[in-house]
Image (cartoon, rainbow, N blue to C red):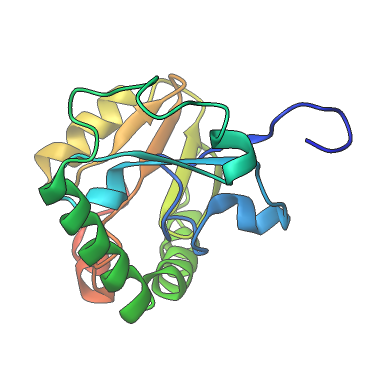
Length: 176
């Protein structure tokens, strides 16, 4: 904000909270956003919650009561998110995501197929770019018990749970 008088807002809803092998994906670039948006993992897979994190200089532009939310401040969701954050920290899930992500990325990279263009990602957030539509492959993987998602038409996104074991990563047939 200081240089150009604009806010840098990091949307970490999908990639934050240890998913990429660091607590926040923006940590990879060694930058500190003015505002951080969190969700998904914040609820620990138990309760939907999201939040906006910023300092008082930024959020202080809102007068108390001037901005509301139907479900804002839900005590159960807040308790769940505090417990989820404790687990992320106590079980060092960022380091675990980094280690298992490198293992999975290496495993995916070793697949020899003319359909695979590139394997990329950080931590347990990995994309496999194909030379053709990814959806049929995602559907076959789902039938085999492996959940993944096609993105941008030709990319298969793998985002296994941060608590997955190395053994569970081994059970899937990643050659589809």
